[in-house]
Length: 309
Image (cartoon, rainbow, N blue to C red):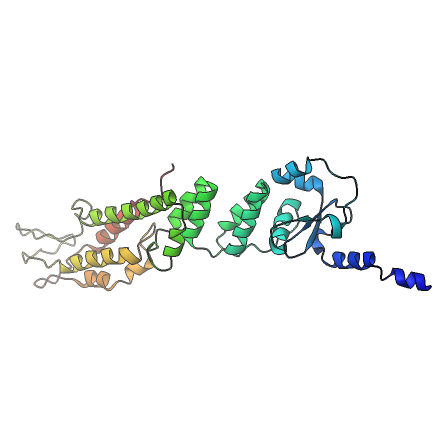
């Protein structure tokens, strides 16, 4: 090998090209691609201009401008992007039809969503929309509600609002996410929770709804449902009042969702209701199946989600 050949291997152009090639993302390294994107952390992505134009209104507009005729080189013609290599790889995977990375991190999904919005990529937004509401994604329901509201996803807004029902919105865990919401959306969510509590309080005192739970004193010496004679001893309903107080107190910090949850059945006040009996004849004070049916019906009938605008 001549000295000239040896020196050519170490020319600045050859060195720069080798360094640039080492930064090309392996999933986007096709030599036939005519566009090169550079992430903010220096990774390079080779991709077809046809793919970008077809899937992104932002790139379609940019690429419609007069372009130079020279073939772009990674080191000189890469288009600088504001996103990290991780975000760009996920975004470009979605629009290219190749396997996307795991989408199980809420922070990462929001970063990819922001990029998809910026570059007007409806396909990527649809993928992220589905991923955000996956049962495998760990994300605050309040945060999810805020994302859905910002994106005007009506179905997802209702779904996310429903997922907040068991939360105390003013707790230290929820409050930081709550205050980040747009005021109009925040007000709707707070109104839903307030309406549910107001309806719950009113329902607990509804004599019609709970008419069948108490064993009433019968002055005519009648018989109970089981055929036993009813005594005329006044019943002590303090356990019912204790349960109502406990339910109202619990509603402040751990409200029920769409159904009575397992926490309800573990309440000591519920056990006391089962154990409450007449001090004279020993019969139960309450028809407990009616108690449970009435409470379940009350919770099911509470407002479940926000109304559409």
